[in-house]
View (spheres, helix red, strand yellow):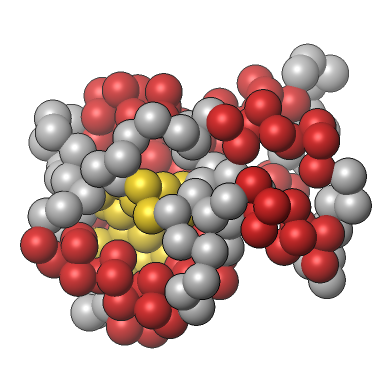
Length: 169
């Protein structure tokens, strides 16, 4: 069993693609969507949000360890930046890790973020530096403005099955 990190900037389509990926992936499978976990910080420290962001990434990754050891593939859906991979490898130890970055164009991410039914972002300028954090790992990136979520999920599933997205460890 392995951990699959589905990552990308805000508006990249991670959750939409993840739901399609869940539908076509073999059982047993666990799915953790990072955005649904933010409320666990019921009374957060007054410190910067990025500290909670890093803590949430470590917590999601650590939660996948007993699940994979229990025989599940685990799909983690969150904006894991590339610089988190070293930390993830340390947490997961011997557990195989696949890393997939959805990275459509900045314009597509801006449009999708503005069109969200919940948590719409009308001014994406503050997130442009965040968008840039997902650049630089061509082996793990899918940069496609045209494919629908189902097609992307099939492409990802096939790539996972072939080992295309495996993080060397």
